[in-house]
Length: 130
Image 1 (cartoon, rainbow, N blue to C red):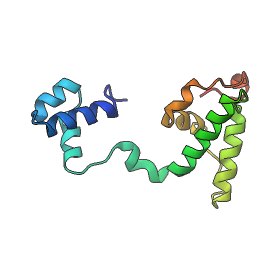
Image 2 (image 1 turned 180 degrees about the vertical axis):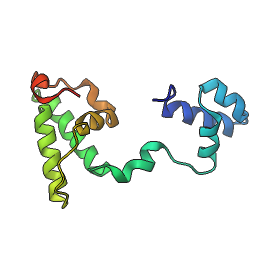
Image 3 (image 1 turned 45 degrees about the vertical axis):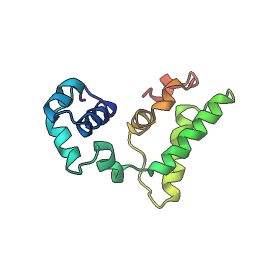
């Protein structure tokens, strides 16, 4: 995993637009120059490039994350298994009969960083903690 974030890349690109050289922006934000060059020539993030491989669309993942956050705010966050089961039903309703992968939930939570503060029920050990 890279030592820089998307925010670093965007900050470096903003500096370049403001007149800073690519080399200096890359050094300042600790982003590889090649990454900046690709972005400047129309390249997209890894997440955007691999979005078509996701089992749930970006929109459906957003709605699922909002449901989790709303449930947590009410004091009844879903368990990991409930989230997996719900996501599997959504995937199946879309015509995809393949089961979700072992790391799906972990990756879903990583893609939706606002879920890191959810007070997940203490069923983690039995369900496989992401």
